Image 1 (cartoon, rainbow, N blue to C red):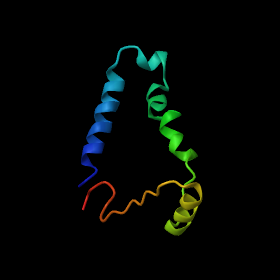
Image 2 (image 1 turned 135 degrees about the horizontal axis):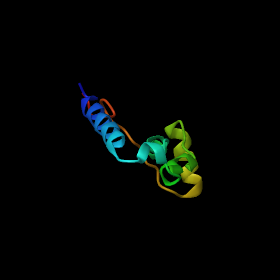
Image 3 (image 1 turned 90 degrees about the vertical axis):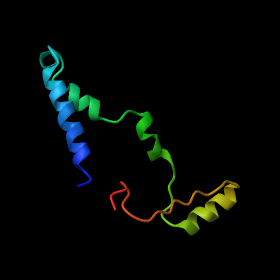
Image 4 (image 1 turned 30 degrees about the horizontal axis):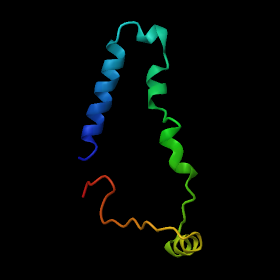
Length: 80
């Protein structure tokens, strides 16, 4: 199964968080805060994505900018 390494990583992370001395009393939301994305990780949301290739080509032509076409075959995590 493809998700097995993710399960192992999450289990190891939870065990590590539970075994750190004093972390539970000092910061109970430490693991939750660690999982939240930072502002830099959310910057892709500011990109004006297009839902069709034709609209992207027309907008890129007007702005004299290149177009990135991402095409792939198979599962996005490589689990085919």
